[in-house]
Image (tube, rainbow, N blue to C red; front, side):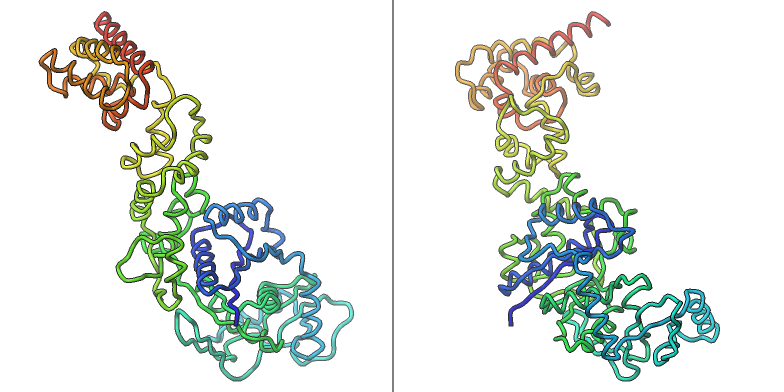
Length: 470
């Protein structure tokens, strides 16, 4: 049997991390088994669905690299199929017209709750034939009255639900539009889905959907319900926990490799291993290794992984993702070192790509002022002589590289009988505008000779003006 999985988000918002994890598990299972991964957009909620949300989902999937083999399919383009199935269920006596008003159903449930019973539709129109001709109606599925639905869940284990606990759910509204539980069943059936991997908030829907599939004579898929993701406060992950949309993580400077690695470890494990490539995951992923308990999101762990990938991925790969942040922060990199060179020296020093751009601006852009605290501490009159000496030795260089720059700075310090601390920090502030950078020899090499000397002159002018003002 060929494995077919699907990811079926509703386009009523962005692709959140819970959905991304579900997509990842479904994608991995299909790839591991040589099966098919389908993307289906469940857009039947016409009031809340939007093209913007569809685009956000597609952008998120593409950014994560979770490619699909079929789709995207849109449920709104399949209404004729759903109507055919509803008509089939009606003709076979497996569904019926319900003429109850909303007020009648509400009163029914209130009376049940008052009597201490579980509120549900009582089947008032289940076997009636005295149908009015002038009243609107919905279509309800005739759920079996007896027996038990057994879900052999691939993650949660055996789940049993008595049919007596289920009511006759609506499968088509009074305006003729199909409901979620009908459309998802028809699509899984017609698309040949063999494994439904989804969040455990769908567990209550599963026995109802299995009964509809059985009524249609369809092969039942296997189900795997993934536990929810919690925030670090133990509550269900939501907007209040910060960025929960996948593309927000991109905007905040995370690499897709880091987010995928982190998401797979939320609810799945392989011994004590923490770091996995996507190819490796395809080889070893197994639904049986998924946890039954919820997992807590930990931003610090994600940052640790992100830092790892910034350091260890090929610089060209990191540069590809860095380009979006460069454009976003409007940094002109036409003059200056290559991105690969900057990544090589800054990768160890940052946690995100956004931060990498922020702290690397001085490699590409000149400045007219210095960070206040750094300048106050290091660009004092006593720093003028060391800076002049360094500038003199640097200007004499005919070969500009880390070794010659390092030697020039050392020679300048020795000529004045000063330690590197007295020379290095004023020089760092002079050429970067602040107090943090990689080693000075590498920093100056990447900034270039002409710009380094010009910035030292700017610092000397700043020191003189400061002294004159005092």
